[in-house]
Length: 313
Image 1 (cartoon, rainbow, N blue to C red):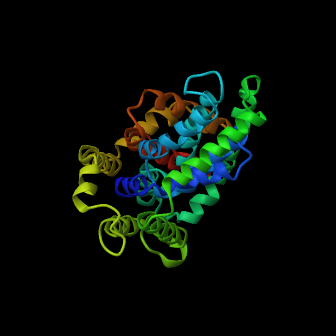
Image 2: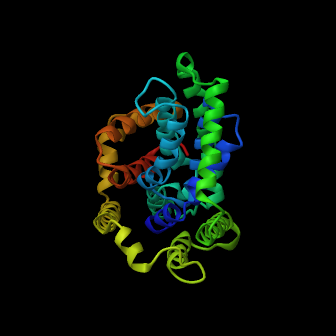
Image 3: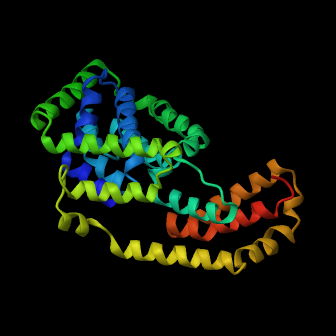
């Protein structure tokens, strides 16, 4: 995740794609919202971090805001563009298995409990409604900011011209950009084909790390790549996985499930009613949890234990 993110930032391929889509659009606020949405969505399966994607597309989003004559925080286009970008960045963590590292962490727990492997394509099938939601974000945000819409001919022309001028300043596609684009296609292809090839996604991650720093790609130097990694988070993640696995093997999570859910007879509710209550509990717990990893490690084993304790499938 870290290696690929820095490779795409350094190569400028994502920024170029963003400007290209805007230059081909009408230049209206809605078309700019749509362009920024799909740039983030296209790259989300290979940038497995909200923070990394935010850093990757922030310059593009800021440029789009300036083009419509608005800074972030204004009650005009800038506010709409940044709000939409924030929503899109978060929602994109769900539809693809590799769009967030904790999706893979959750999958590890799932395999341990139920001994069932979910492929990249199977996850996409289950998460497709979220992809539809991502596509609706530009529509909803555009409606929200209708009174302050900058969707006029002058503004549209300015936005489109800004994107065209930005592409000219970037010049022709560089060799580094071409390498990053090829790497992107390779990684996505292996992810999508995992149900046929049976290649473990961990192997794909290691392969991507190697390709980023070694010929024929060599997009970034090994030292630069290693310095970009938040090693404290990596070590903490390893510790969290160990604690989670230990808690599951010792029956801690199952005991907690029996205490909270089974003894309270919540599991006797109809499936839909129980599901709604569970979702509300998870949402409020997430509001006070310190990040995705902690949330996943704390709740996924409990959720899986609940599933095993339920009287229905």
